[in-house]
Image 1 (cartoon, helix red, strand yellow):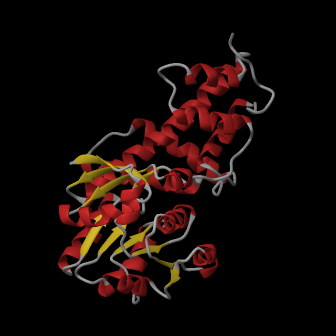
Image 2 (cartoon, rainbow, N blue to C red):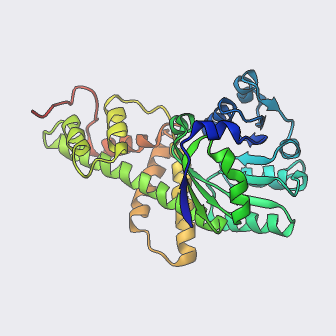
Length: 317
């Protein structure tokens, strides 16, 4: 396995493929938008056509089913919520599998379970069709900037077939020999995202209750070896009470559960995951399902009896 980089926009524009995008949520919509901006022909499908309208206005073509997307595309990208949605678009009556040509590749970029990844990759091999699991790290901002991280897992020639498409929105691509390894990598990263968010909230609340302005701690973190960019961006959002979703609470909770399922298969302990998952369950129960995952800190604020927010600021000399 290895990593490649691609930051040449001229290359992105000249090496284009007719690409289908199935699932036009936050991520899928941004991927389709970026593909159009970099010169790809794009065919789109979503359960509700309204989400496609802005893309159709930019030049995308509408397909009436996942099968129709597959018939028209050299690479089919799907990025949907969960395995049930992937199953429907892949194996349903009007699904991708039966309509996909032998030369085309179905690239699923959804975050799903390791077991499901194994199942779908096997089903495509048995049918003589090409499949790559390629989950991603980053959000809409990174897609539109062309800096999304892609974890491509599958046969080498199939991964290579997808790379000109990925390079439209990614400058860092990691190759893995199996689809399952790509999914495992994504779940490992998402676990850490959740743990970091809970850890940041815990430290900010501890500091605040001890009389230290949270903004001061965020400033210190940003200037130290502890200074992950996430701490600055999410810390600032917490203090501004901005929980507009870049990644939903409900989606990260799903991924924590998928990681636990995979860990049971490999007999791996995940001691931090259990507590973190319970906090996300509480966030769901308190009505934060469709807020940004940073809203888990609201649960912790309730337990601490204080709220982080504007006005808690200080600066260093």
